[in-house]
Amino acid sequence: MTDPILDVRNVSKSFGALKASDNISLTLVPGEIHALIGPNGAGKSTLIKQIAGGLKADSGEVWFDGEEITHKTTVARARLGLGRTFQVSSLAMDYTVAQNVVLGALGHRGKIGLKGFFRPAMKDKALLEVAHDALAQVGLEEFANTITSELSHGQRRQLEVAVALTLSPKVFLMDEPMAGLGAEGSQRLTGFLDQLRHKAPILLVEHDMDAVFSLADRISVLVYGEIVATGTVDEIRSNPIVRSAYLGEEDEV
Amino acid sequence: MRKETILNACVLLGLLAVPLWALSVDEPFIITLATKAVIFAIAGVGLNFALGLGGLVSLGHAAFFGIGGYTMGILASHAQNYAPLMEWPLVIEGTKSMPVIWLFAVLFSSLAALVIGALSLRTSGVYFIMITLAFGQMLFFFMISWPAYGGEDGLVIYVRNGFPGLNTLDPIQFFGICFAILCIVLFLVSRMARSSFGLALSGARQNEERMQAVGMVPYRLYLIAFTISGAITGLSGALFADLNRFVSPTMFSWQTSGEIMIFIILGGTGRLFGPVVGAAVFILLEHMLGGLSEFWHVYLGAILLGVVLFARGGLIHLVAGREVAHD
Image (cartoon, rainbow over all chains, first blue to last red; front, side):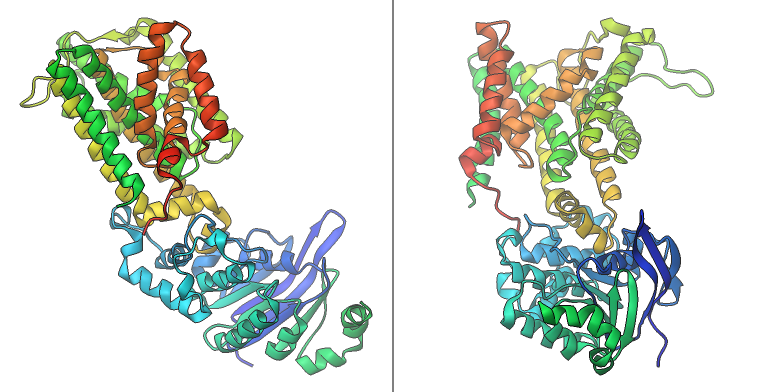
């Protein structure tokens, strides 16, 4: 196997008596989709925050692209190339769709400079090109001039992905990108992510099992803050611990 | 053309027409009122840059207004007394030249805004309002107790400062200077609002988490905005001092901060011309209602309540409707 680009080493995080992350180790190698599944409250979002920034691990290390990022700020991690989509859409709601992606392109440019104080951002050809390219990839270009707050829930999810694309990240961290998309939408996104993995590997937190089983190269199962199994789709499907701890529960419901 | 653009043009033309009319019927007092409205508008445009675009509710902008005013007062008082500001190690004289005074007013107020902003922006929300208020009050009481420049009584400048080629004592010419500055400030602010910086700043106001995820630091954006905002308000303070040929600690009072904010709320938060409309209406009300009663603020309060309750976006929103997304 190639060297991992993202390497989480023995990360633990507690909130009082609750162990949200219990000695978690996982890796992400180039070209793969590594899905992280687990029941609600298993600590998936907590783990994502420790990787993307926003929450500091109590112990353990997070390595990204050969660099330790455990103590770096969210902004520094984003600049290094961690592209994140949020579980609950986090966008500039008063802006148009185009403005949101241009913000991403601007962030990727990394500096505003003196010219950036006087030149209209929405007439900057370089920024617009990146923005429209990203919108086209997710299929939102016809909504470029729509105000973001008027988008449907599913379109907002697509926009999240588009903004992440403008950053040309080295790794995508996607927290439930399929949530609320509907059957057709999630099928489309599944096809898209399938291609996207060749640009940059994806750490995918997802509840949609159809998507996970069709996309993932590897799956890690998180239960009560602990990774109980990591393996290929078939290994996870047949793993007895996983069946009882997670998939089994799902079947009963 | 957009409705708002037409409205903005009408506001500017109206602001220009009133003093010209006053000139023709020989009413210099009205020219002075219009000048005051223009100067207040500049102060409001300054605050609106931080408040409207960046969402930074500062209740301490009187600090920058006052620093601008005292920059004028101190430089001009030294010049009129022929006493240098300092003699060692190098001689620094006062000045009666407006452009030089403006330069220093902008310099000092932006420096103050940089320092106050750097500290205040570590907080947000109500704490930010309180800390900026506290800084404003600190400077207010400092100016009251600093005897060198008049203390509580303030400083009187006998002759208005000069501008090359103009007779600044002529009300209409001084109005022209202030009006030109307002136009320049409005032009620069509208450019900045649409620029990459403006896009990022307003983005941070809407969603800090999003800005961090694309690799931008909201704190830095806010600090730059706050500094620019303070500089503009400081410039208006210098003009205000020249209008009155008098500076006093009142310029630093929290009531001044409140008034600047009232311009914005009346006119429309975040709208380019919001504070211009607000300041003009404020002066109009002060003039008309002030004639009715000493306690005209009661009526102002009622009007403000009406705007906040029934016309949230201010007067501009009432006339031109919702802000159209910039293209």
